[in-house]
Length: 471
Image 1 (cartoon, helix red, strand yellow):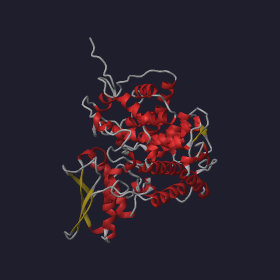
Image 2 (cartoon, rainbow, N blue to C red):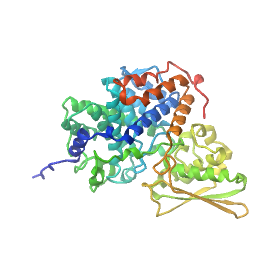
Image 3 (cartoon, rainbow, N blue to C red):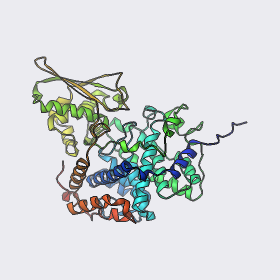
Image 4 (spheres, helix red, strand yellow):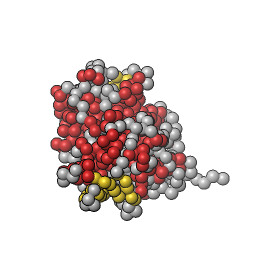
């Protein structure tokens, strides 16, 4: 005889918290939601001509009312959510929750924007959906820290689908029972392996898009009466059993304060277009450059790092020192350090195939090695510690205990506005349209119809030759 089901499952508790919570009353939440809508849109515009975005668009045969950001093309909700989610994450320039790490904005903003267009949601409802969707995505990281990565899955893909259910469901005002079913359905729609690391393949880029479209589909199935398991999270064959290989998840850590205390306003916005854990090392490299150290005199560059990032950003070391393309370089700390020393930056223009294959950069990256620091606080904190040894034995050392853009050193509104306009220029969006979108985002909570917001991001048929100054 099977054991009785618990009286109150995790999905039920989450659903109840979603229905009753009021994130719009938190001033920080309103500010960060607007920042997310601005940042994600700018990144989508920057990526709009890239081959992977064009391939994503070509894969969709589903017309509809929802905008492909930076394009004159419209698709159905799922198609637009997929393409925009893929574009938002494709350059690895999107936000990160340091407690994960997870990239919530690239899933939630495309999902909620597309659903808002389809269903005519207000700006206030859109902001509520973003707040709740990102919160759920971030909180899921507390259940089994690092175990999803260890199991071979990408947390953004796995947790993002549940966040998309929460965000779209909150915006569309689903009932508690409908949300529970949507979570149960979405558990069978998550997926995303990290084998893209092997050779710089594109699959990581589609993970947020797939999560965004799947979350919306789960919501619509639940709205139609389709049923899912209410024990989807904690069940014997549930979400964390499947994607984290564990039956010992700390669900109370996820649920603590949900609906009253908001974690997601602490998400970090990226100043560099690469894997977040590389960012403190980039800042260390830039500090050495500012000291005027001659690169030709560098004999070795030794880094202390966290064990949890070695398999993604350090190994195999020979490959990370000589990534075969620009996308593979985004997941290489040796490349990040070398390009920062050479170019004093690590933006979109510093991640190109030509640079990744240049002899000068590879020679410098070949000098970068690492040791594991067992006391490193990752994933709660992203740090960098680098020692440079010169040909005369002189050693320079720089340590950074924070991620620029994160909780301890957030990017300012001015920084984010500059990033947005730079990304729009990179993608060839006329400056007047970029400014109009920014103005609409500032007034988002007051917009009776969020579709007005997206109109300013429509660009008709600009080809690759029309894009702005790259880099």
